[in-house]
Image (cartoon, rainbow, N blue to C red; front, side, top):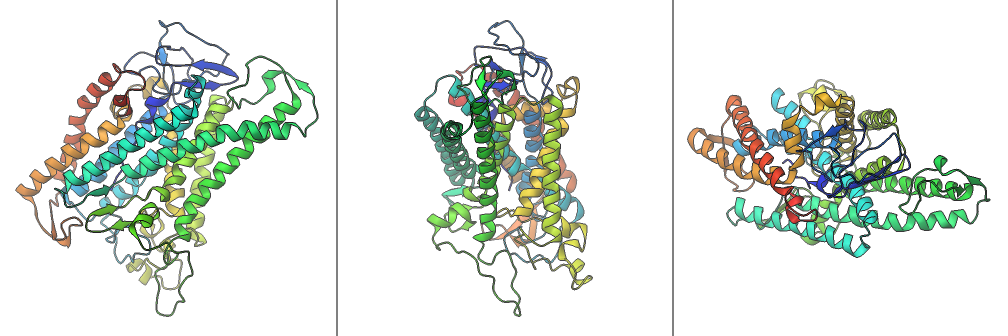
Length: 533
């Protein structure tokens, strides 16, 4: 299954760069030079306050409402591309064009894989694995911008918690309604991703609030133990909302700021690592497919009841289907929160930002290779039993073929999946970042989808599965595997041209609808629930 996403860019209204305060509240457009993400002077349809505004050259606080607005395009472009990939993935499900997955066994923890999907199906699924992690990462990034901007506007912790809770409740309600509607009442709770996003959004918001309180507290504590020297404000790292722009500060305070900032970033990085590794620790068999001559792997087990399992593991009962356990995906949101903090708080130059993103992507790519070579962080150890492994007995199962190397366990995500998808998303973010603005602004299709992401998700489900049902009734035939909802043999349309034609048609229908909705939500108040979509 693919993914929906919080349309988190609508919550971003201020940012801070290079020691400068730049406010972009909904009533205050700003003007800034080209910077991260291909920003440049733009006019609508890139609305005010919907994306981080960048200013890397000079401190400024502009309140001239006649100034053109600026918008970071890279996150919108990435989000839009992920929407297209998600539509490709969901079209497979809508038509039952082929088995959904890289193999035939659902990409589950500890599931034996005996064959690979055909080449086109395998390639599409491998690309679409980027969707859910990318959406969750961008959501966490948006939480960092939202928290910083609302703190600047004087929001209290209670107001922010209320905001996070309301939006999480809306996504959960949508999950319930979609389950009932799409299964005609057979399933009461169908978590295809929305519930996971709801909980992770709420938890990322709470985590931002905790960091916002503990960072200045640690700064003050460390500052008491450091010698006092005075240095100009221009040499200080930008950390807290209370910092002034041009007043000198003691060297001890500046060092305390830096120490506190780095400590909290390392804590977030460690928390992201723990929250992806616990998918390995909580696996019933540590991701190993047991053979008769292999001793069972000792692992931490969860209570065997749905109320606990649904947070960490895949759950499938008569009335509940949940394939995206929220706490299994929390690491991606935490990493997005960390990345957002890095972009907001440090005076990166555009080149430094690009290089940092590429370096991070390269690090994740290396981590993915290491998981394959050294057999750690995988929930598929000993599970690849295809012809490729049979022709290379005794060798590393992941090195037997390209399909083996890139096979990923998504339900729940393991460390290899985490590394692969974060590398891919960060490389794409860097790619959109380095493309000149005069080029990226012409990617109107991706920008339109990216700015109305949650609306796209809901609308495409209705349109795609409705058209898919019609095509199945006209051209479908019975397949040799079961439908996961009905339990009967699936009915599908196994024609690649029908597959691509349906996907292209749905994307074409959604383009003007998303354009209309983007204009519609700009007529609403900044905190209107309509902007959430």
